[in-house]
Image 1: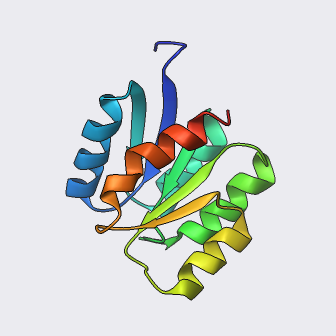
Image 2: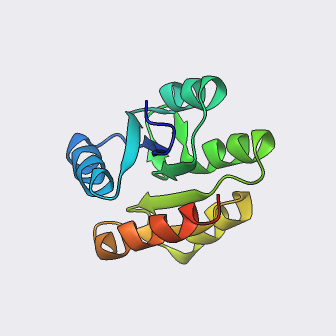
Image 3: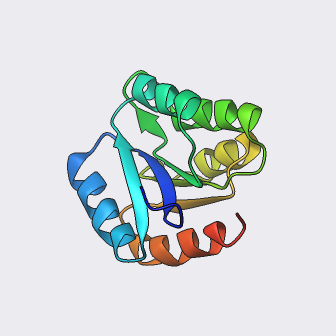
Length: 124
């Protein structure tokens, strides 16, 4: 593992979205670890170190908001970005209240994904 590469945990149950995210973030030199459900995400959050968390709002076994709360309990500083199809203002508000730094709606805001991640990683 390159110590200078930023590590991102991507909690996303859609394989195509995971592949797209990995490809995009590889272009900017990030290492992306993907998990497809709540339990896997929680296991990685508790056992690994990441520079940024990229969460979907809906995951098998739990929600991104629940994960966000768990991450914030462990690490109040690391950036958390939601990239989700949950597009209602209440979905975004709930995530932000749980401790997210930003919330992008998929697929419409895919163009903002890399720039938002770069901005959030600059905080670390």
